[in-house]
Image (cartoon, rainbow, N blue to C red; front, top):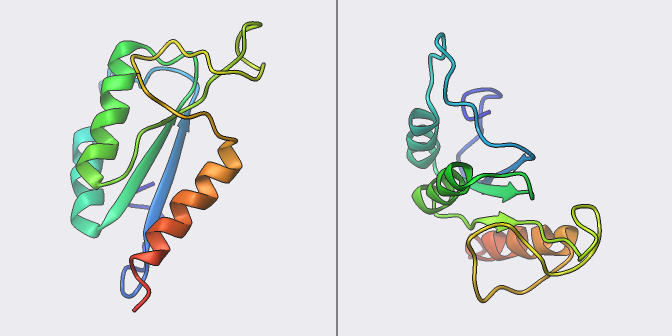
Length: 122
């Protein structure tokens, strides 16, 4: 996604929202581009990656998602759920996070995009 499609970078805000419902696959033998390569290329191009973690993400995946966000100047986002488990509404999570505010995902994405655009307005 960093290399295709071709990103228009002049006078733009380039944001990527990466949603995953499982840990990343790091075991592909024929993998040409690692997540580290993609992360570095995104940072080089000024593309901010906002990872959105779901309840099935393991500790390694959380670490990688946090790395993607931090390296590209974005924020790590995660979904919460209620006492009934994933799919329900609430403030429960399996991730290693503290001091967070629960928001509707669509509202949060709009807020993040608006904040990024505000930095570009002269």
